[in-house]
Image 1 (cartoon, rainbow, N blue to C red):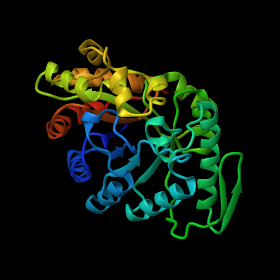
Image 2 (tube, helix red, strand yellow):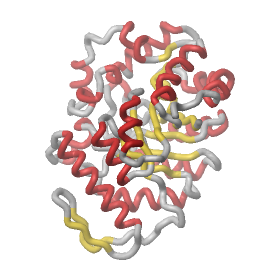
Image 3 (cartoon, rainbow, N blue to C red):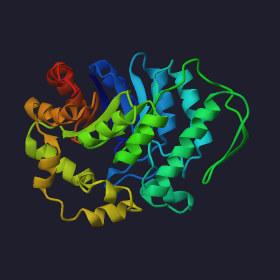
Image 4 (cartoon, rainbow, N blue to C red):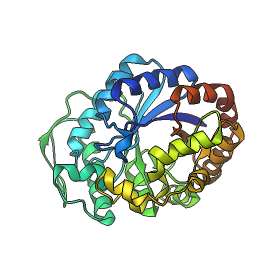
Length: 322
């Protein structure tokens, strides 16, 4: 079992994210995972720095902890050739501590370059082409690629690491899980669905299975839940909403009816370690073996201390479903 810490780039500025990553290494986390957004989910989150710059600084300021994007969309806002180059560079700078997490993206971030945000079935086909391009460029030499959606013309990534970074592919359904098995090295998910792991394994996937676990630490449950309601209520809307709305104002409008009870149903809140272990066990019971602690509470340092004191050993004792 490996445990990660979510760096919420929508909620903190770049220097604070680097500081939290250093503290996460000190607290005993195995890896940090950063969201790669252009916009925050809600305006009152107030941030959205460039994730790749932050990751480079983290690589320079840490020694052991692994790094991951959670996740990058290499089909619209970024061309996959750029991501192939960025990931290769970061792997070198981090001494092979980087995992490239990729997915088909959200309109919130991808529409900003003025391109059409296609339906999910098209985005999945684009993601397959993007992964083929990244793998092709990582094979070395000058390469060209002519797909239905994406093209590369005589491109070469000159700085390649001796060990290529693994790729974890985000999957909300069986089609994406199959892509993860065929073209990725791992699976990434945000819901405790055993059918995702089953689809991934049935398609030949044998790599790590990443999942984000929603939680919020505070000295009391109500304070924690109110913090989630204020900044992170978008998380209870589900992927079909989260992938389609274009701007923070739309997420604010879509979540006006979210109640404190809804937050408590979806997040482990407060000071009781048992609540956090119960939430994490949903994911290990589904077959996930890399758990990302996604703390939406008001005090990140308090959470990191709580993790080291109360959660590290019990979480590592959980056994993923075989």
